[in-house]
Image (cartoon, rainbow, N blue to C red; front, top):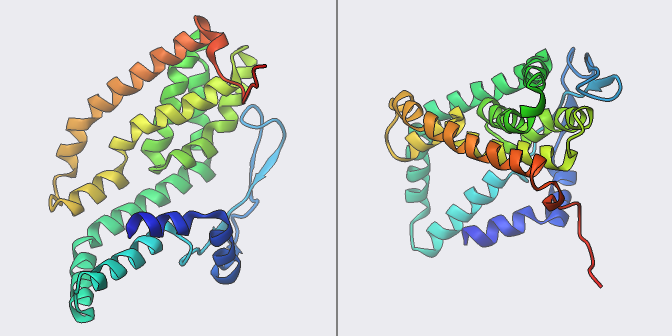
Length: 246
């Protein structure tokens, strides 16, 4: 039920229709287009949009919530019992929700203050080792924002521009940003807070972080070495779209 619901919820046609019907969008006052990104982060002066999409119905979490209700009813759980379970879960997750909210706020603060660009530009000073450290740029983006998608949005343009300046493959470095970001997922605060709440280990976030941090660094380093090999040893192995072989 969950897989089917999430699959249907994610279909572009359905998601788009729900968004058009139920998602209000407004510009954040005093922030929308008030911050401008400049070279070398972008090729030209680009105002940073600050729009809030309240996609309360089209969000994947809403699909999961509906799937939980349907599954409960199919299993014979009474509506009253479902409400009690929901309330118990809500109380159990309250600290995690607060922590996730603050981490999301940190991600937006990082973005609109220009801190992400400063950190990214620092990595570009690594010269020929940029393929290795560029991977950790993606790692850093996910560690800060909790999302590989957000990391790609933050640093994707910077990766491409820097790769072009260093005569590296932009496709490789954008892919490295995403692959490195996956290795940072285990140390981002949102994931840790959700995990501790789901496993009834609230209060052990620091301990978990300390135990997984070096694993995350090691895995990121392995990906970085692989990217280095692709950049200088096997550059022809980097795919650039579909090629039809006759």
